[in-house]
Image (cartoon, rainbow, N blue to C red; front, side, top):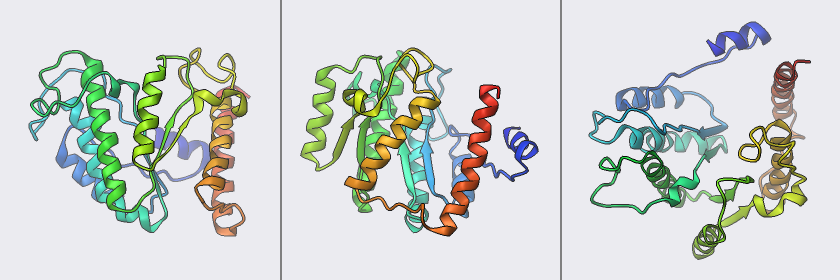
Amino acid sequence: MFANELFAEYGREVLTVSVDLSDISSVRMGAEALAQMPIDVFIHNAGAYSIPREKTDLGYDNVFQINFISPYYITRRLINRLKENEGRVVIVGSIAHNYSKTDSNDVDFSTREKASLVYGNAKRHLMFSTWSLCKENGVELILIKAPSLYPYWFDEYDAQIADYAAANGLAYYNFTACLEEIGLDFQTDTYDAGLHLNYSGTVKLCDYFGRILAETHGCPDHRQDPAVSAVYDEKLRLYDAEVQKQKGN
């Protein structure tokens, strides 16, 4: 439906691959379809939280499979394709990963009832398994803490991540600690009083983080590449048009 709306609005074809992340057969077919496409960025944004619980065909809790097993499977299947295109993988984590510890006797937390524990456990598995995948493939992993007012990011949380990053030679950026440099105002740059960034907040953070990626991590700037620039300019035009539409302009 959304693809049809985009085509009607902008006249641009949108390819969609529908996948049921709780069904591994569907996941495999979806991964094969994606493997035939050029991929620049793959974002893991699955967030099944408080949903009816059941066992999947693999025997795992469905929350665990949706948030960890299936996204990880797709990433492994696409890793070579992503490397060919100098693609990026973005893992959307959660502070809930810190609410419990891994239990080898209950890997998927199927015996737990509290949604935040089950969800956080799956996100923790995805984060650490992706880190292992990065090491296998010589991919640089960068850890960030997105700017927010809540849930509160305690000093001990930050210290744990900082220590882990230091011990493993990883870069870690806590953007909540540099609000002034970014120019963020939680009153105007978030849409829910400090939890999630809105459009203006996202632009500010991307501009700030983009400079870090280019200057510190050697990410190439392709804006002067005519072929890349042409594609980017067209996507930016469509994006700006959608922003204006949502603003009511």
